[in-house]
Image 1 (tube, rainbow, N blue to C red):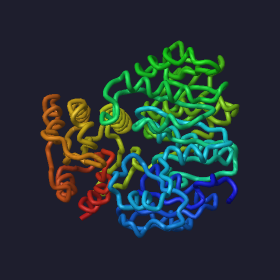
Image 2: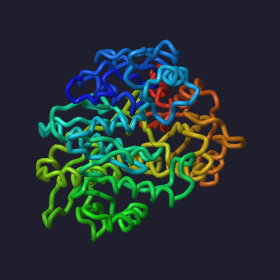
Image 3: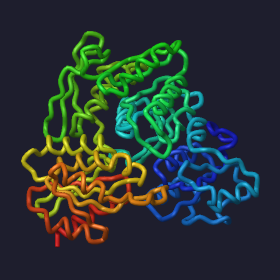
Image 4: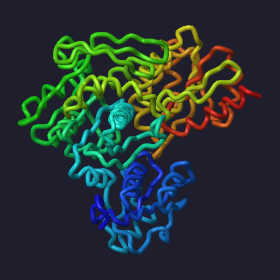
Length: 464
């Protein structure tokens, strides 16, 4: 067995190896010396990156892709029961391991920081990964997006710290035993798996209950759901609770956030002392994410001043307000936001960074269940834009729900006074937006699906 590889992970086969969460685990295992294989629906840069690390990546799903000597098959909650490779695993009696269990096994013996919350997980995890690397602590990390600097979503480090994004969507974050956990916010989402806020709170309580004895929960002091969760977990034995935010009662109190174009200057009060540092991405929500990262690092014993300086080296994650380019005087920016709170935060950040610019949005709703529950709020968020084009719903893992279409969002947007238009042909969007845009405008492609592909197409149309 190679050093640092659990026995079951020596020859893993990943179904959907190109996914954000799955590819990160596969990369770490490959870097540790495992014989990694897997399949994905289509070719991608991620597939090529995995091959460069020595992994075997098949395109398409077929029974023959699963090697007879595979030590396990790794799946996410998105893999359907009739997947041919999953059926073949049953025939061969190959153990099936959920993605979260695979990730948990990689954290064993390390000082783990698990970052949870309805929004902001990827950004905050990435901030920590970049800052700890800058401080020469050589962390391992697994993130749900590619970091702008390293250009990857995961890495195996020789240091003692492992930073991981902890996904609440399917309750899988309850598998981890972190020394430090962050909860950025608690809201109702993932409606296919949670029927109520009561179920959400129960799930986050279980996550907090897995923090190792003597460990620390870093949690927002300003967000309603997080405040409620704080009250629920304070009675947990051997748990240190550190709150952060603008509340006067916060343990790490945000004194001031000063926008400076596409960056922010943040001043916090920590242990009675003022500390000012730069966050090199725009938006109040990202500044607060950086404060959460600061509090978590301090909980591990990292000097606050050093960590604050290192956090300024973070320059973003792909798809998190990522500048795709500029053509004909128009900047095109890509956003992963797909929940109303995220949409509002990113749109406000763009307004704050370029208050004189006209803001045009291409929004692709993500999931029928989310649109059914939050379509009205999505439409209201789009009222922050000068004009919006709304695509059909990106289904991801879901089947359609009768009567649930993007028209729900468009109706809500128009009711809120927004200029919103439906475009059902994705191929027509780039030309439509290029025809609307004028020099000085900002174009924001927004959503968790394949809307990200439209940025380069829009730039091409603007250039022609």
